[in-house]
Picture: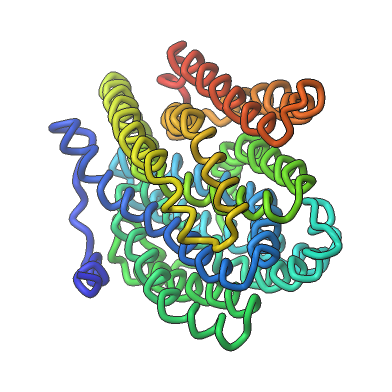
Length: 454
């Protein structure tokens, strides 16, 4: 089965035209590879958590802190992926292959420059960054060692999701899927061996190395012209007007994605004040919940392609119908998956820890946050709809309001004023996610995204 999936996209893509025909068929054509790709994106996190758990709760906490700092810093890469995807999707929808290829090349150049620069910063300032996200004296040395290797490999770590996200919007989700398959296959073999030989450093080396493999494969596909867009090695050049077009959409999205990422780092610091066991439980529970929401979020990630390409083809009503279908499907899938997770939470947590206290705390976190993750998944649909249309300013403003005026103040105040302890943090997360989803839906229904020009 794995070998068969690895052979996906080994020949030029015959692109399915999502601007005509059955909406359900078009959504499904994109949804299954994107969803599988998302599951493969999160699977290494869970696999990594299993091996880190064998090294102890301090190792688990250290990896979680380093990953939190990385996710905050890579907001610019998330923005570039969304911005370039919106531009490429418009050109693909308008059947302008030359500009679609040019936008792809300029986006990849911007991604390499951004991730390389952030990686250098992360390596140099690893220790202050780990202190900033809440590493205590016990966890700090481990977190610094992990973070330096992680940031040294940041280009590879971020090219797989960034290029894959852009190609999803271009209507070539199979490329991102196969990049994930190469990464996951490499990690399955490498991590047990490297953890056994090198301990904590082995875990992060396996993570970085597996993404190197996926990145090289994906870039090879683009250069060989086996996707809906390509990189022409005979036409390698900097095109500043096209870069500006991408950056005009991406720059507001830095705040759009950066605000929740920074908020999560601050929450990580608040959680760390309750000790390494609670922090480790939160790290694992969050990874499990993120994996559980991947079927719904995989569906949500179809939205930029359906919106961007149909707007490019002059069909805003078709784009609107697609968003409605996707939202309903996301709610249904997420309810089923999270319901199963709530039921089997003790068995799931036992896979990642042998400490009874950590297991109990993790089960409580999973059950407390499941309803909030339903709002989180729905939020993803309407966020993606606005971004796919090229409107990154509205989601940015909503994120700022929901997170910095609602979620973060409550996460600080509820544990102290009501004496809820860590439960106050989980309650604040849920309230913030529901506020965010409500504001995104309200903004989407105003309809300004239909006339957005790129």
